[in-house]
Image (cartoon, rainbow, N blue to C red; front, side):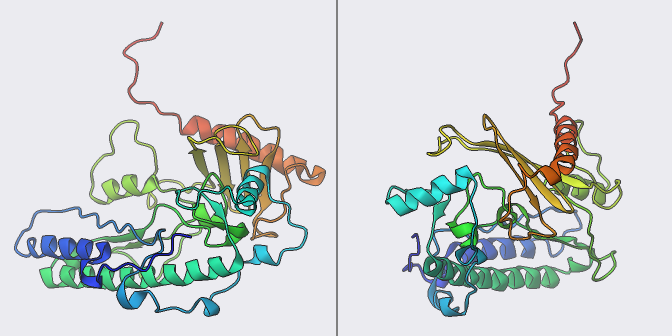
Amino acid sequence: PQAIRTAVPEELYSTSYIAECAVAWLEGQRDDDQPFFLMVSFPDPHHPFNPPGRYWGMYDPADMETPAAFEANGWQPPAHVASVLQQRDDGTANLKAMGAIGTSAQEAREAQALTCGMISMIDAAVGTVRGALEQSGQAGDTVEIFTTDHGDHLGDHRLLFKGSEQYEQITRVPFIWADPDGETGQRRDDIGQTHDIGTSILARAELAPPHGMQGRDLFSDPPRDAAFIQYAHQKPMDGIGHSPIVHTLRDARYRLSVHDAMDWGELYDLQEDPGEFRNLWSDAGHAPVKAQLLEALVRAEIAHTDRVPLPTGRA
């Protein structure tokens, strides 16, 4: 579903257009000493899966790995995932929508191959933009950051796209910070969050973040041992009867998700079960861990309370 061989040529495709705009802007900085911030945001890789030109057939679906969920015996998906899979089996899934849908192993491999094509095109575009930065003479003074907003199931847990699911394939994203004044090849294991990026950029530019700005400076503030994720979906889901609202805590070992108006939740040991197939929410042996994570989740929610605007007085 949503695999479309576009007639748009490579040179007119969005990835090429955005790279061209970035290159033109950087060329304008060649003789300018003013500090700058440039965000280059590519819509790909994303469904519909439609890499143009040679990127369409660059990768063979037969070479892609079949997701483990298609071979996992005894896996019982949680209710909100089971309902999505059931809709596809029943023929009632909206295959043109944005939310998660069930998929077959073959569709998953095809989606992976086409996604690899889109990624390769972005790789080439990023190389073009970085080349323009070098040509501008600004590379030695410029921090380069690479990240993304979210992932795609691409067949993991027999799903495509994304929805209210909090699996690692959706929530764990790459983050690379290339600093001309930094060390080479360092890897940090403490947990960061997307909203830490803005705070870190301002700190690197020696600018104070505005009052109430959430997030920490990844390079100066104390490490965080867990990440808080909040998800709210507007469309009611079959199987759970309402719009899913999920609060998740992810630490170095576990992922805990609490679902609004549901008497069940999710708890996974990412060290022993990296595929997130065994839900330990009701497992008595993990009750102490669950209690600790629930307390940590409450504390994370308090820490992430929006404090802006502040009241002018108190009753």
